[in-house]
Length: 451
Ligand SMILES: C[S@@+](CC[C@H](N)C(=O)[O-])C[C@H]1O[C@@H](n2cnc3c(N)ncnc32)[C@H](O)[C@@H]1O
Image (tube, rainbow, N blue to C red):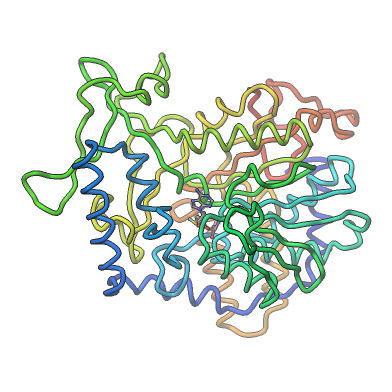
């Protein structure tokens, strides 16, 4: 963290230091998930129903792309994993950073406020979260907003959640607005649920980003893009071929990967001409959402902060499944396990286009350190009396920042309005060009890429 940006972030951090450690229930829930891995009878039934559904689809129309398989397994409106399952509960399949510690959401909250300030404190601030899980991240960010009321005074703040899962939207509503949320009467309403937080802030739920109203917005997407369907391609002697999912004729009731015998529309349009890897994954659906974010940021102002496990265009086969905290065969019991793939940030940067500035990716460890996680930890530890909460805080800090845990695996990436680069900090003497990336005055980031 450097110069004016560091000073501004530290000032904001000081204002939230009166918030004490949040009760440890979340962390206990998260750690107890490590112990659960068996499937329930209900899950087994969903798994076999989904398998039957996919098998008859493949028998009727031929092998499906990995993207189609993933879309069905995760978001089929009746049997999809995200639609049916609370994967983040005590019987869940994985832990995410906002569930591990309040500090994560608090630092992102500080980032949101500092970006709003850097944009000239616009009258309207829409906080938009994509894939909010249990609502913990949004809840921690809103607590920061309350602490920073004096800074935000005069701004009309609203929260907008893009969530495909009705089950998770109910959990988010419980966390954020208690029992006071109302469901839309008609299924095709763009806002399918709405409510108000205890502080009176309006909260709206949407299935798709395009339904969120235009306006100055800060977008957060934590472990959202890795859940979107990917296409997989393999280089062969005859050119690129798409990896498809077929029924396994030798093993009844099982699925297998096959290569499409000839080019598919996806393999001819999604693989770059100069691609030098042997195997490539492309998340076209994620690409469309990135383009929407970039367009919104360019047209209406604001920023997007994307945090996910990912790489900068070098990895090949990252498609994997998680169940009960263990790696799980991606083709076994579809609909009962999480399916995920690393986010390719080189692709994200490419599709974001010329209208926005791209920041990062930087590691989670670097981002959180730049945002002042060490100072925040010291204050929380000082304010915390009992030994077990101290141990939990330290364990959570290590999980978030240790390179071998989440610190290096997760990356942070930002999209900013280009005007942001001409902010007062630049006039104050910080030179922004490709050759001096270390002087970038954006909290959390240490490097910049120009599209
Ligand atoms: C891996 S969870 C991450 C949850 C949360 N961000 C966290 O870090 O704890 C993915 C989230 O994205 C939502 N989701 C998945 N696919 C989606 C889609 N196509 N549209 C909207 N939400 C989606 C899931 O329901 C879930 O809330």
